[in-house]
Image (cartoon, rainbow, N blue to C red; front, side, top):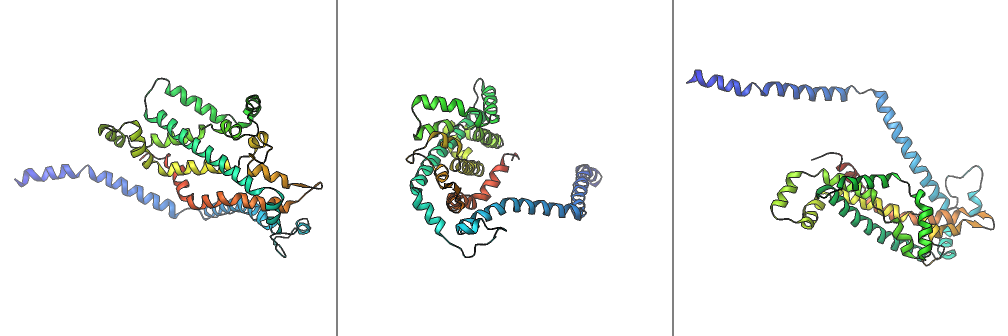
Amino acid sequence: MSATTTPVGRVDEAPEQPSRRRRGRGVAHGAEAASHRSPAMTAAGYVAMLLVVLVVAVPLFWIVVTSLKERQDIYVQPAQWLPDPGTTNNYHDVTTRIPFLRYMRNSVIITVVLSVSKIVLGVLSAYALSLLRFPGRGLVFLVVIAALMVPNQITVISNYALVAQLGWRNTFQGIIIPLAGVAFGTFLMRNQFLSLPSEIIEAARLDGAGPLKLLWRVVLPMSWPTLVAFSLITVVNEWNEYLWPFLMSDDERTAPLPVGLTLLQNNDGVTNWGPVMAGTVLAMLPVLVLFLVLQRQMIKGLTAGAVKS
């Protein structure tokens, strides 16, 4: 009995030993590579990160500082990095010289309508291109990719002519409809949907889930970080949109806040940068708070589609 059972035990254990040794060598090699990383490379990485932080933070710091300076202090040479003394008069000028709240309301309307439209259309189109089967699906996706590669500036003239012929200048629909394309959202959400485990999708279908139930109960909950990232990017882009609203609206009843801030630039032939910077700070605050609240979800969502579970 013992003569027959001992070889069987050896046969069962033999294949595991090489794999264990390989895994052990792989872990040891990774730890060794991490421990022997060049100090120069580590220092170079920190220097690069510091440069990126400076490039981003210094302009923001200068905007805030300038918004707190008196007009004569803005043009002092050499430049003053801190206001001495500080003042909030520029913020008062922003809210009194232009109908700031009306421009803010217009921005909220345009941002909400455009964001909801893009999110809904982006999710539905991505779902169709990734999990539904229909003729010409690959061709439709190629058209989406082609639209993603075309800058919006190229279509400005043709869109302007069309909107003008329709009589939509100085209207919300004239601003919103030409900007409602969802190529980026379709591309981003499609990649996320394709990265979902196919076993879960098939199991839901076998349980009787239809297309809409599958999307609402299974696909979207598993894609929440990417959806948050897509939504945040969309909201920020629409809030900061300037070129097309500037061409479409010169009426305070429909113009958004970025267009309204241009009215603060020229004063007797000289740009009064204090109110301009104060208005910029007020315009940045909503999206800045939104980004700070959702930044982790955004980072997780942008990287979720890169690794298949």
